[in-house]
Each structure stands twice: as C-alpha cells, then as structure tokens.
Image (cartoon, rainbow, N blue to C red; front, side, top):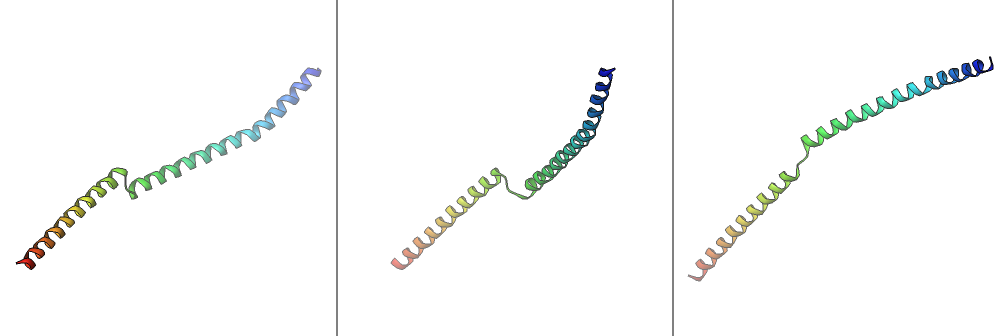
Length: 87
C-alpha cells in the first residue's frame, strides 16, 4: 500500500510539472516562430531595398568608365586649345 501512495504522489507531481512545462514549451515555440517570421520579413526588405555586391561592382565599373571618358575629353579639349593658342 505504501508503494501505491508514493506512486500517486509521483504521478501528481508529474501532472503539476506538465501543467507548467507544456505551456512554457508552447510559448517558446510561438516566440521562435514569430521571430522567424520577422526575420524573414526583414530579409525581404533588405533584398528589395539595398544593392547587391554585383550591382555595386557594376556601378563602380560604370563610374570608372565615365571618369576615363571625361578625362579623355578634357585632355583632348586642352590639347585643342593649346594647339589653337600656338597657331
């Protein structure tokens, strides 16, 4: 009979523990799920609104090309002016 009494106590304590543990696990799962959704939305926002590495590299090449063309035009303009002044 003594064993049956202790078994009842253990089952009762396990029931009380489960009443605390199950809602706690459910809450933690909900928090993780919400955080995952927020992170996904943030990643989408970043992908839509910020440049990628490839876009930045293309922009750098474009600026470099335009600067080279601009300096070539400036050099030609100065050379033509120098030739006109010499003549």
